[in-house]
Amino acid sequence: MNHQNMPSTSDCHAAAIPPDPRKRGVIFGGGAVGRGFIGEILLDAGWNVIFVESSAALVAALGAGTYRHDTVTSSGVHRKTLSGCTAVSAQDTDAVRREVLGADVVFTSVGARNLPQVAAALAAGLADRHAKGYGPLDVFLAENIHDGATIMRGLLTEELSRQQVPDVAVVLERIGIVETSIGRMIPVPTAAQERQHAALVAVEPYRQLPFDVAACRADVPDVPELLGRHDVDFSFYSDRKLYIHNLGHCMTAYLGALAGQDEIAPSILDPRIAGVVRGAMYATARSLSRKYGQPLPALIHHSDDLMERFANTSLHDTVERVGRDPERKLNPGERFLGALSLTAQWGEPQVVIPGVALAVHQLTLSRPKENPMAMVAPVRAEVSRIVPDLVECFDELVTSLRNGAVLDQFIALLDVPASE
Image 1 (tube, rainbow, N blue to C red):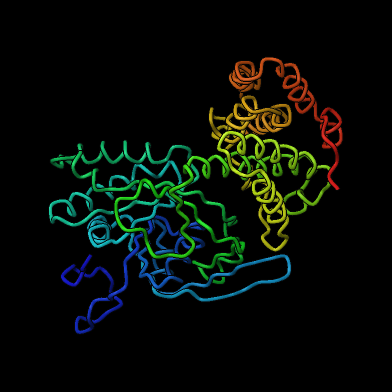
Image 2 (cartoon, one colour; image 1 turned 120 degrees about the vertical axis):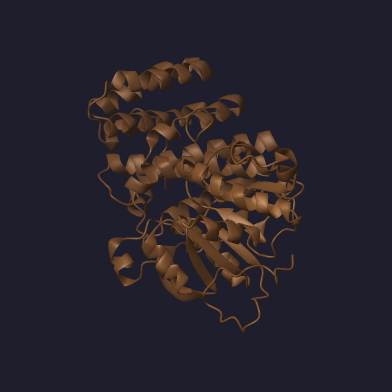
């Protein structure tokens, strides 16, 4: 798309300087994933990046055009400065509308609860694009939500209708809502990091971003880390992320909490925890291999690689961050009950039951004033529906946790070999 006649929303260029010829990527959300992952791969590929952000401090920091980006491993830190970005406030609706109008690609990284506000802002810009006869546009969802494309398309349909945009169906025909699988681990920046620079972010080295290439309507961005395969259904990648990565990561957090740990790395380095987590991840790997016809050795390698990444001691990822929001994580189809259903169909659900029990326990701890049995009951009903022969096991594990079981006591109830 030629943007030479587009109104500029950046104050970085004097009027006499020609418009920036680079492709323009608009990222809703300048948070950890937005600037720590999506911003990095676009800027490294030579794109001009515009962040749409609600935090005034981040708008100012990212609007300066550069920010510090640290890649951390257990052996050290690779530090670099990313440049070529600007930012607009999410509250500046006219500026956001102009950026969507002039975008070559849009990413969202705002969290499920904020998607309705993003849809409202997007709808206005998409209506302008349609009115001007612009070409198709893809909106990549860099979100940790299940079935995000359906959710976003529904929100956009609502917003376009509410804004009385004509030909809603025609507008949406030219918009690709593209799900992605966010595998990079990025802790929330600490107060000390924010004092150094409001936009400083520390990430792990992993940079791959699988996406649903079949959902694209425009040309795929020329960004090496974007991985789209026509020969593999994207649901394989989303299930792999949810039922291997998310399941294992969250189980590590909950078991780490039982062991009195504050961070993920020392938790997974505990062989007692590693044995339980590996057992669950391997079971879902075997089930995914059978379901999708994908090679098992590659999925086992993926699981082992994830456990090594969990053990990144320089990342300082916390059990609190990884384990938060247990209610959402216990939804049907999510990492716990979804993995239980998957393994029940393809084998070995018994190694996922401990994760379900741990998640229920975390839910009751997060709501100390509520009746714990009222929170346990709907999950127990799902367990009974999916694997009726394991309800007794689930009850035993939940009771042990409610009675104050520590890690060794909990693991003693499981038939899981210790990790070497």
